[in-house]
Image (cartoon, rainbow, N blue to C red; front, side, top):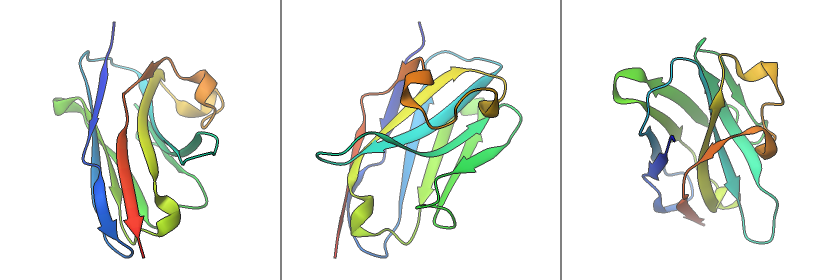
Amino acid sequence: QGRLVESGGGAVLAGGSLRLSCTASVHRDSTCVAWFRQAAGKNREGVAATDSGGLTYYAESVRGRFTIAQENAKMTTYLQMDNLKPEDTAMYYCAARAGPYCKSRPIFSPYDYTYWGQGTEVTVSS
């Protein structure tokens, strides 16, 4: 059974940067990996996703500020977050499912992901 572990959350001022990491315990050749976030009192929303084909997908709210990337040798997926805004404050979760391509199923539907991490908290203050 695969397991995902997130790290890298923290508290920053608006305009700052953070890099989140998601490390898998089991290597899979074909995987779609996504980052979701959930702010207090709100639904979980997809932020970014990438797959074994190297394709990337972003929510409109983070496009141009966030970058998702995979380092296969380390079984790690990163989320580089730049120019952070207070509205980015949330618990961030890593999720994965069998691929090989994210676009074969709804990309940002949390119900379509099999594996989840425990989350890492991001707080952005103005």
